[in-house]
Image (tube, rainbow, N blue to C red; front, side, top):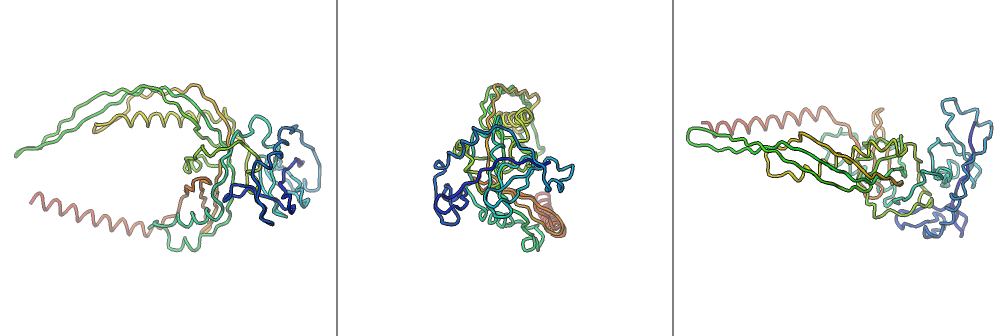
Length: 362
């Protein structure tokens, strides 16, 4: 069984070509006649969202024979430009036709409770992501010699990732065990004095826009690594911003995301209070109690560039913040180089230790 759903495609009124959101101009742009349009000018397309009934047409076709049982969640969409069939999973919300390349938006994915409130548009394009990948290699002394030249870029995708943005108040009570260490010496002895203290911190903090990604496909640690986003650039959600990019709908709801949001809030609150305990040699929290209240959530689509590469039959994933350009991703390590550098630094450390001992004790 394949589900046929309604699609949105943005057409240029001048030449009829498919128009996309342009990161440089922050407007809709036709790649054929180069005409540009303000995003607000195509806002009427979003009225279709309000009329979405949430009813899908069930249709049996020959194509359904090629969908195996464990892929029963796959969906088929008909491109309005060329009539080609676009296949995607249940969470695909924006993509492009594999035949004519025209961008498509699946409007039913943004109907109902999980319709995004805001979107941060892409500020950086695909070329910026490629440049960031090359720059990511710089200064990595333990990178294998031929990784730069042989690492193959398999895929690069600009994706609007769904996030829940949580607002909450945090009330904290934290006890710390602290020490101050004083050392001195005379002609005969070296002295050490350790004084012990107890420090208490209590108070309230307000948190806004704590992000938790709402897509099971995206690794949580990878999404957290490219933070932060500047939410001042967030605008009211319009499907026009998705044209020319990929997008997923939420498959992790607010209730499922609350524990992760609370954990981030507690961790951040503890870090803030710890930063106020100064002037001690050591600071160790003994009791930490952070309670969150007044939690509310709103939904956003945030821009992410995903780059998948391969080298020597291994896959590597990189991510770039599509707004700020922050780039992250793990790189391989040349073990031979690592041992050589380890030997060099160990030798230097040994020489320094010898000189210190010889100078002070002889």
